[in-house]
Amino acid sequence: MPSWVLRGGVEVAESRTPDQAAGAHSGSGTQSATGLAKDAAGLARLARMAAAVRENIGRMIVGKTEVVELVLVALLCEGHILLEDVPGVGKTMMARSVAASLGLRFARVQCTPDLLPADIIGTSVYNPSSREFEFRAGPVMNQIVLTDEINRATPRTQSALLEAMGEKQVTVDGVTRKLDAPFLVMATQNPVEFEGTFPLPEAQLDRFLMRVQMGYPSAADEREIILRQVTGMQPDRLVPVAGPEDIAAAQAAVRTVHVEADLLRYIVDLVGSTREHNDVSLGCSPRASINLFMSAQALAAVRGRDYVLPDDIQYLAPCILTHRMLLKPESQLRGRVAADVVREVLERKPLPIEEGAG
Image 1 (cartoon, rainbow, N blue to C red):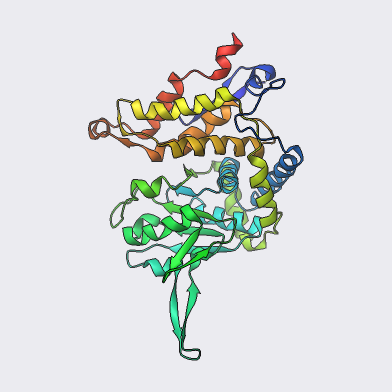
Image 2: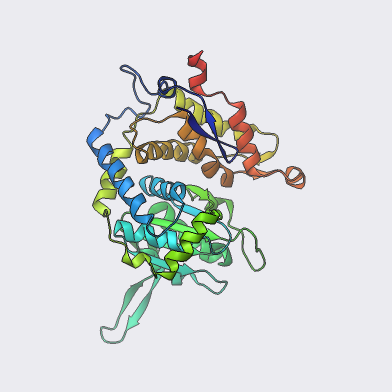
């Protein structure tokens, strides 16, 4: 059976036998790079939960199983997602469906230039009855927060999300309040219209675990979307198939997924290569290496495996690396983009499995 690998944004089949594909994890007695004992029962529950969530969201979202998987990966890694795509492809519906399927509190923020930081994190309001200031929570105090068109908010308002995304807390009037777990920010932005927008600074882009594109549906999927809209199907009708406790247990279990030491070196080499590429002025930081490692564990678990394959790393690399690097001006003038750099790095770096498959 062929193994599917993402190369330059396109899935291609590699003719590996099951034994070859499993070669990087098999290990009769090999030690995982994490050094943690495998939680077989927890990983089995995680796989069942992921399958149930995929099926439940599939009642609302047509033909976007890969995107659902990536959202689950971000949730398991306690990361955040930047959904970058044109309007009308289902970004808001995706966020609402995920929240409904997991029984999590959901809030949506429509970003505009006049949006203030207090509109997101909350503010203290004077209560004449008690003669005291009372905290009124903002939408960020929910568990899944959709920040729509984030690049239309001013840098000052964008920065209000940094503490919440990085530290899982907000500070208002000198008082720090912890956010309820799990906490996931799904920010959207339109990659086409830039008039009246404020590009996200590199420090904030790096806070996003991955950047994902929904893409246009196929003709068959689009016909099904129309029929479902006619019947009035809405995310509110979805019944939760998991809860916060299940997600917390899954987050702990996913860290026990087996990762070969060779694959850890492969991740470090991939990320390091972005810093040495001729077209790149600022390569990916060690945070990218950590995120790629953890995301590969999560993807393997979501797909029902207790070990990471090289294919997992190659599949995730474009989503996790492209928004973390800056290209040189002369490279941009030649039409080069970060996706080109990631594709070349993946092509040049030999897979660990190939070295021993001889």
